[in-house]
Image 1 (spheres, rainbow, N blue to C red):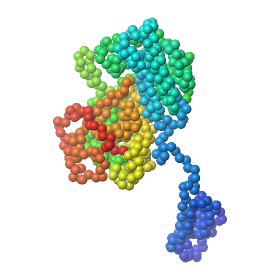
Image 2: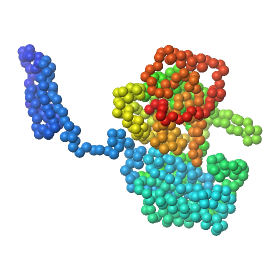
Image 3: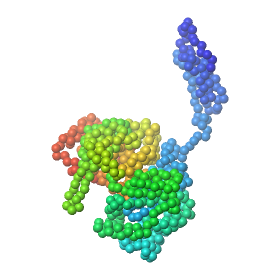
Image 4: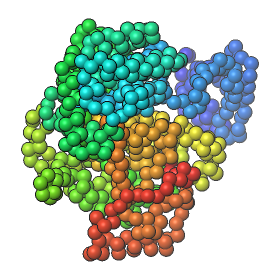
Length: 595
């Protein structure tokens, strides 16, 4: 560019209308924008101007020149990149991205009874279906056997020296293999799991040969359990959850299961290199991975290394009522109301007496013995969850022993704020009520009503986005042994609840997660048990702001609600155990509380 000519002092009295133009000359000698060039004078030169571009130069009296350039999107981007999901693009990681578009995987479970095969198979199927949106199906040979020959089969049925019974068991296996082949022959990425003992090398060779027509990857997972206490726990779990032992006495069920297991032990052949790609799991502590390659097999290996079969429980609690809850606003980072602080106090009592307390019953006297047990506390990074957890005590438990033998000093309920647990971000709608959203963004409001799962707020998030950032949280829950109290948000808990309860993702945005309620979840091999504890009733709150979107509440009603909470807290006769009860409120999908 040409050197800048400084204005002589004597010429500074020139017409003020040209001063802004002179300043532009100093700053933008040659400014090129697309195909337009701004020269150092007051002229505008265009070079190779495509059709559809309009330019005008307007002089505003007393102000600088203004240049208007309008351009049609069809002119500067005639062949745009159009994604199948439209404006609400869903992350590929949660819709079975094209990285796996040609992959199919068969997982063959192997191991003696009571080693956790069914538990692992169910967890793998759930994980791949929920987080990767893959079609998965479990083919349990035991189910086919019960379908063909009944459920009340004696231990002798599993005697490998009895040719008649062996033929029947092989028939059940072949039926499962036939339906597995039909399932895997369908189009698209899919994962099939064959759940059976497959104790003998001969049986595993037969399975591999039969499945060879599919020409897809086969991964064998062998579970080995030789720790007595772990084995006894697995057998007790099967007794409590398996339909075959539902009406059988404990001693009788245990003896029957031991006889069945002994029949398999006599002929068991461990998995070796001749079985191809496989993973060996020793007591859920040691893992041997052999010749395992590919996206899906690696995802499965990573996931099962976080699993265990030991009993565990975790608790989901929304934050206490926030100021935004009371006024019907979504999102934000507001603090708690008086009702929210009251719930926080009651949650602290619940955490100490229930979450962080183990109960052992004496087998002879039936007397219960209560003792503190290590427990974890997770919150989001938002203010309302931290304030809800503020009254929980952090006592020191000495010499907590890990399963690897290490002893540590444990800080009870040591808070851990995780950004993964932050509420769904509403973008430009953050801090608005639903009525305001409908008025300001009617098209967005209608789109959300059509598809709540994949809808993404402008500059915000969708439930599918939340699913992506919850995957590491779920892995932590799967691997953790201690009870966990998760103080989070409605959108977050809906997805966690749906995952562990086996609900499809499409139903997750409509799950009922009310305020002031703690949800206890206990996963096991055949499902997940649920209990709900109501710590603060709706009547005590007068209004929780969750019935329908509201824009304001009269000051008088606010004062009445706060007074009612103070009176409730000051009552000396308050007993948490009497107020704790399971929620029986019906789910209304037409009136979800928020988000």
